[in-house]
Amino acid sequence: MTTVPLGPRGGLLKPVADGITCGNPVLCHALGICSALAVTGFVSTTLVMGAALLFVATASSFLVSLLRNATPFRVRLIAQMVVISVLVILVHLLLQAYWFDMSEALGPYVALIITNCLVLGRCEAFAMRQGPIRSALDGLGSAMGYALVLLAIAVVREPLGSGTLLGVAIMPAGYLPARLIGGPPGAFLAMGLVIWIVRTIWPQQEPAVHPEAR
Amino acid sequence: MSSTLNTAAVILLAAILTNNILLSRFMGMCSFLAVSRTMRTSWGMGLAVTFVTVCTALLNYAIYHGVLVKGAPLCPVDLTHLTYLVFIMVIAGFVQLVEMAFERFSPALHQALGIYLPLITVNCAILGVNVLMIDPDRSFGLLETAAYGLGSGLGYLLATCVMAGLRQRLEHADVPKALQGLGIAVIVTGLMAMAFLGFAGVVEL
Image 1 (cartoon, rainbow over the protein chains, first blue to last red):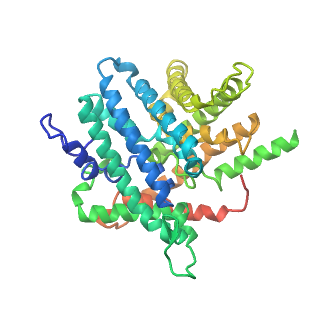
Image 2: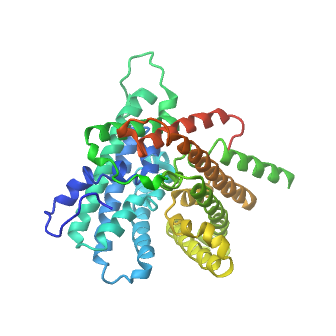
C-alpha cells in the first residue's frame, strides 16, 4: 500500500509523516476521492469533514489493531466495517445533535466515510499487522494528509465559486461567482490541478508501474 | 398508478443524466478511476454495480420501512440510528451471497462479474444510493426506489464506459509527465461532468 517500506524500528512519528507526504492517500493512492471532491466547495465543510475523518481513521485503526489477534482472518473485513460504521454513526449523531446545519450541509457524505477506502485501506494494510499506538498514528497521518489536500482545494474553490472564505465575502464587490468552479466540474478540475502541481514538485509520487493500463 | 409510473420514469432518467451519481455526486470515484482503463472492465464493473444497487436498494427499502423507522410493522421502536450499520451489513452480506450463488449456478456470469463483486462492498455509489433514497424530503415509494437504484447504476455504467473510450484515446496523447495517469483522468472526468451539465433542466429529480 505505502510506497515506503515501513520497518518495525521506524520512529513513532514516521507513520504520521508518511501519511502526509510520500504516502499521501489522496495524491498517491487515489483513495477517498469521492468525499474529497464533494465537500471542498466550502472551507467550513472541508474542515468538519477533515476532523470527522481524522477521528474515524485514528479510532478505527486503534480499535482494529487492538482486536487484530481476536479477529478470525475470514471475517476481518466485516469486523473492520462494523468498527468503522459504529464510529461513523457516532460522528453523525453528534453532528445532528450539536451542529445540525453542518450535518445538513454535509448530507450523505458523513455516512460515506464508512466506504471511504482510505479508512478501510489503513485498517487492512497497517492496523491488522501493527500495534495499536503505531496504527492510531498511521491513521492520524493518513487522515491529516487527506485533510490538507482537501483544504488546499477548498481554499481555492470557495473564493472563486462563491466569492467568500469561511463565509466572509473577500472578493471585490461586483465579482460574479463562477458557479462552474463551485459545482462538480470545478471539483474535478481543481483536484487534477493539485495532483499536477504536487507531482511536478515531488516526481517520486509517480506510480512506478503503468503498463497494467494496457 | 400511471402517475407513479411517470414519476418513476422521470427519476430513472434524472438519475442517469442530470443527477448522475458519479459526475454530480462523486460517488464511486475510486472504483471508477481503477476500472475505466479498459472497456471490458468498465462494462463488467458497471453491470455489477447496477445489479447490486437495484437489489440492495430494494432490500434496504424493505428493512428500513419494515423494521428501522419509528412505528414500523415489525419493530415499533425507532431504530434509525442503526441505519448505516444495517445498510452496510446488508450490502456486504448480499454481495457475499451473490458471489456464492454465481459461482454455484452460473459460472459464465461469475467469470464476467465475479472479480468485481468483492470490490463493490466498499463502492460508495451503492451505500450512497441507499442513504440518499431514504432522505425524508423525497419520500420514495417502492417503484421510485427501484427506478432510482436502476438509474444510478446505469448512470455509473454510462460514465465508466464513456471514460474507458476516452482513456483509450489518451493512450496516444502526449500528456505532461506529472499529469499522466491519475491527474489527466481526473481532469477528463471534469470535462465530462461539464458536458453532462448540458442535460440540466431536461429532467429534475
